[in-house]
Image (cartoon, rainbow, N blue to C red; front, top):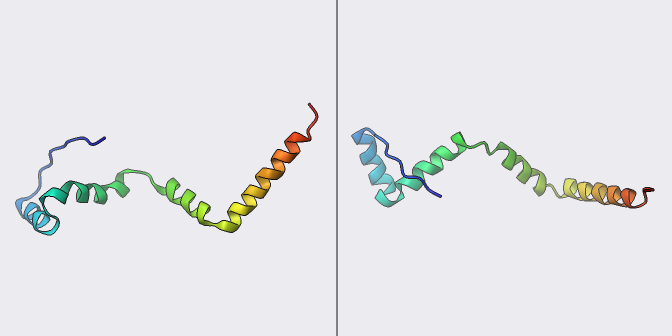
Length: 76
């Protein structure tokens, strides 16, 4: 969901933004600039890096499967 917001820019900055980005793309450009500064994406980046590590993922899968086998053989 998007929210509408009014901001004030120096006329020279607005003109440069208009010339460089274009009127219809300004909002997305500003959002892309702000996003890394206002949202904590470090956890997401870390999870992506871990998921990309095939050796680590294989070890984690092996550990998880071994734990499940141990739980099945546990006396109730």
